[in-house]
Image (cartoon, rainbow, N blue to C red; front, side):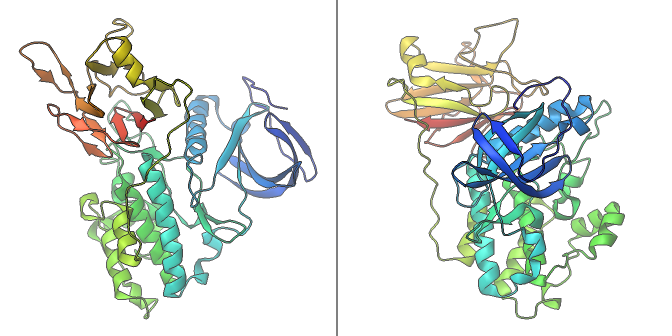
Length: 439
């Protein structure tokens, strides 16, 4: 059944139909949802385990849009592979008659959109909020921004625990939101307008780096709806959708309707949390979801320690794994590169076809041009690895920084200073995300 076709064929499954896929044989139970260009079915394997099968309806899409939508679908699969109790897990991916699919966790208890009025009490909505925030934290620690957080994308599993899903438009930290056309205007602004921060909606600001503050704004809108019983902080849903400029004006002016108008018993701390989440300027919001978790729970927040990816090469004590960008999943073995090459520094830069071998780690990017030819450097002193923006030119020891900067865990690093790395750090170079892993 699995096959790659230049022209995808139309598909629709019926209850009881058998699917013979590379991961095993499945039986279709029923169609459970559809939206955009995708269908979702519940399926069952030979052990009676139920999964969700999400299929991108590539057959219904114009060929010139294939590449962009397939890339977004791949982002969803990759984000869903993060080990988290608060994210819908992706297990397998492939093609059915030329249409990409993902097999993921099945959440039988619906979405938050259908249960907005069920979390009116502080005990219930605080528990819901912490689960959502932990899901965002797990995404952010991997360098991923959801960018479409809304009630429809919070599902409840068989234990009725909330999980985040639908990362199809997920952007990666410090990557451009979208592309510009020939006159400099944004070609596409992804996301659901009623939950998007103003910088995501503005054509003048959308060509910026993504950051956790985007999801924090969406979280504020979502929790306002939950606590208010379905109301929007900036007015009537229908009215706002009909006049996007009017909506954006309200957001930028921060004309929020008092939450206490709809719920007089809401704790004051929640009024303050939502007020700060909905700041129109990203720098005025919370810098991380950990800050919000600290305010509403007694949990001690600590840096997430990620387990290393199993690698067979015993000499590979440190690696970089491509977490986003071209060559997704590719691994660079750092320790052998230093020791076998008898080098003190590894150079990172754009894979210039005219100057092959200029850099030890050559990065490619199909649709953007943000990676400099001499972008960054890696070095090791004793057991500590360091990254530096730019490279030593060899002229009086001068370091020339990159054009667009190098980022570690969402923060831009200086070009002439060595920044120490720790296990799990995300290095952003242009549109490529590299995860640093100690083995």
